[in-house]
Length: 397
Ligand code: SF4
Ligand code: SF4
View 1: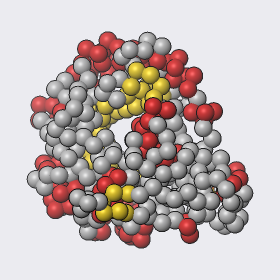
View 2 (view 1 turned 60 degrees about the horizontal axis):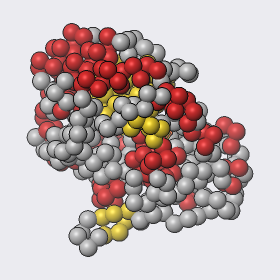
View 3 (view 1 turned 30 degrees about the vertical axis):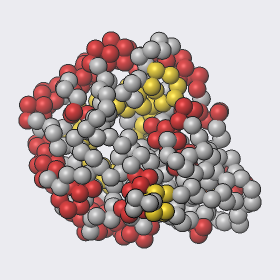
């Protein structure tokens, strides 16, 4: 098993969308092996559906794998779309394992066949993470655009657990579910031996830009969900709350450049969330700023990646609020992708989770369009972006 490094600590608020990384000097890659998905989720960052391209298996084996090795990648997560919509997913997982990569698969667990389960079990040391956003057909199923999918997903999670393939459940709390469903979801994770439940809020990226106003859980609701699910965190289950309300802790640092992402067409980015955020209408950044090259057409992709150096190009937390903050030295300044999706430039405060700006924090204003759908307006420029310092606060005792 390849080594993992937890990004979650007791001292810092979990502000990065990722839960784990790899040891220093190595990289982890998420690979979008297909853009296609059988579902149509309200929050999908890549706006996937029953359309789009699929990576050619020959390109994966002949080009992607050797170039990822050149990039010092040790762990690969297959993603999509829905990775099980790729006809060769088992073969791809087997080849990656054969080259010594740690292999994970993120799935909606609604189209995995028994034969694929058996084959993945046979390969060994493959883990599957399943998205579950509520614990009813009326919540999870509706959120994912297919109510019946809930029953299939739950039954497939049980099968994955029996095949020792299940690793974690990925959950986006939303307004279609009752609060208690999130406790049921954690109990279900314990019953099926999942290692963790990872919860993060619906974000203004991809289809989430339009869904946020109607389906995003407000802060007080996220706090209630935290209170209901935190007691499940213990010896048998890790419950990780990403970007939940935070009033005390400084923020975690950004891992951009360590957890890379390869789009179906081969473009490699230093973090997928930077590209998803930069694609939103409120963004001040161009998605191309965060694309290093193409793994299929750039033989020097490893050199390009090493030369990119995100934290030398951009200074996260380069604002007067952070500079005058008593938590400055201990704070990693949070997630630049979240800053972009809030309509700010990198360098502004990650105000959604920064404890100092909590009092100022508001949901982005929602505007109803002429078609009746909701959209998010850019956050107006405030002192967080550049100008005035806010009052200094002492760190929590
Ligand atoms: S103001 Fe800046 S340094 Fe202080 S807690 Fe917030 S993000 Fe961290
Ligand atoms: S931009 Fe940085 S902090 Fe945000 S998700 Fe990517 S790696 Fe994590």
